[in-house]
Length: 194
Image: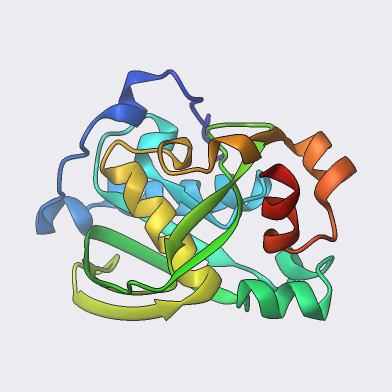
């Protein structure tokens, strides 16, 4: 079932989400929610979705960057973003236990800030500890675009949006991003905005 994605201004997007306990994680309700969130994310389309984005203040997010999501990017853009397909992942009660000092900056959008994008600096590499959909403890190390998606979704669970971290001068509608900046590297965009 496709869920409604709430938009910026909804209080749930600014709350610290509560952790889930084992009995909740393995319950039919949460298992169904995970499937509904996946369908909603794919239909949107997006590469990640956190429970607060569907109105639930719980520490649950999903990530999936399918091969068809990168189909219209050039090999140079894929290399610059360090973007490769990411299999479906469920992250529950996540904690970033390591974030590199090295930063990468790229445009980000959000299903809860519909129609806009901005350049956001993020750690290039992260390590995340979390529970999966079976309530099993997991550790994941990610870099590049995968690390960016994880940081974006974990921010949602902390009550943060990418607009809290963005380079304000880069904030644009998706239409204007396509019209003026498509095909340019992040460094070229930043040099033109300074």
